[in-house]
Image (cartoon, rainbow, N blue to C red; front, side, top):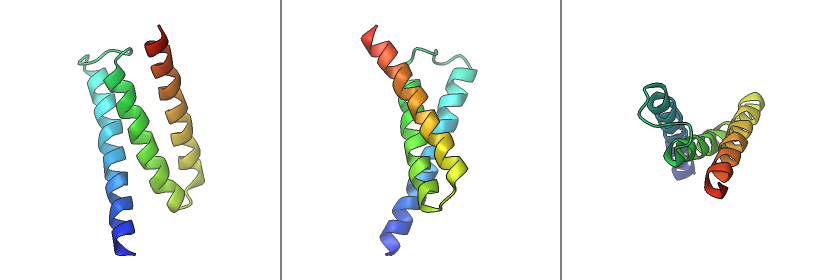
Amino acid sequence: MKWRKVLLEAAGWYGLVATLSAYGLISNGIVGSTSVAYHLLNLTGALALATTVWRKRAWPLVVLNLVWMAIAVLALARIILK
């Protein structure tokens, strides 16, 4: 169905923007490594990208994004439970 393809494409673009935004924000000192926003951008960006590459059967990128999500979840847990 066409709407699924559009949704998948939108997810991919969101993932790209979210992940690059997180990198840009931390690289320029706008947010710190303990910023919840930074880790949420990484988590949601990796989730969106993992969904997109899963559907395309790009397995190395699926694994990369699953690890990226795990790192973000662990960091968020550390920040929240602190």
